[in-house]
Image (cartoon, rainbow, N blue to C red; front, side, top):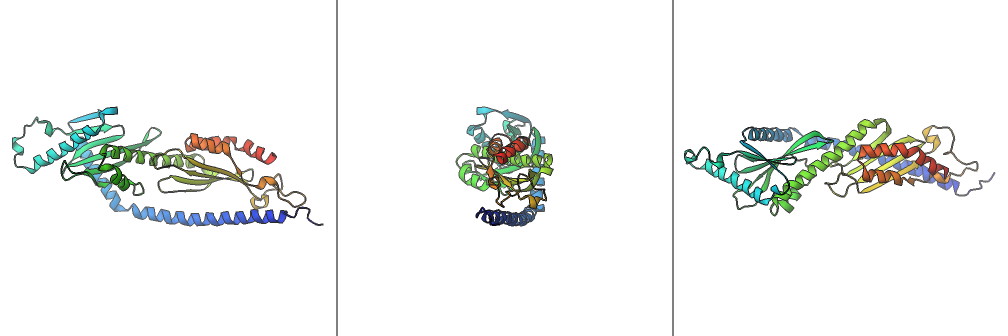
Length: 327
């Protein structure tokens, strides 16, 4: 009997070729992720940990020896205050470099060891005319990692530079230093804090989502700073759901470019009995085998954090797929 649909074989080959292409891409991604893990381990060796441990001890000593801690809010944190901190560290360094230390009044304001707290940032004076900033990150109200950045300048009139830090290598601190530090040190300090907190927020969203929905998530890939994320949901009515997220910049915690596609699978590939996804009697593939955009899921990902959006997507996925297939 002659096939009544001359395009059925072409559709079948197209779907089959697309599945082979997707499997090839997944295999390449696995190889990339393996190399990524090896690179991350190599770039996080003992030398980085030694820098962190040394700076952490130095910051702890500075905080332990403080004579006063000042909390800054709103306009209290400004360029004038930062200039005062710079002047203090240079005067303290000059005092120790001269032979007249013994003539300094014990109750002199220059001998005060003041630390400043601005939100999640702690700013203190370190030995050798250096300013230290300790960044405290958190997620859902729980503390996460501490990061450090040490600034120095040869004199009060010279621009500051980043001497050393414990900020992840894939966050653009050197670019921020070149663009901001010489012209607006306060903005540089705040921007680095935003970079760190946004990175931790994106990373923790992925971690919590994986912990809560591990059995429903297939392959998951992400860039080092988590500003590009892709993962797969499978076994939903013989449909694979692919989710792709991109963030406008590294201080964003919600994605700006979202793509959620439902890819119907062959029932034979999934080992399922023939049903709504099987061929028609004349051998043609149903129209609903064409991938479909899930706009409700994309809206949820733009509004909610990843774990919240995931719950919203899964809750509404069966009726959404039913509507697609029935139409």
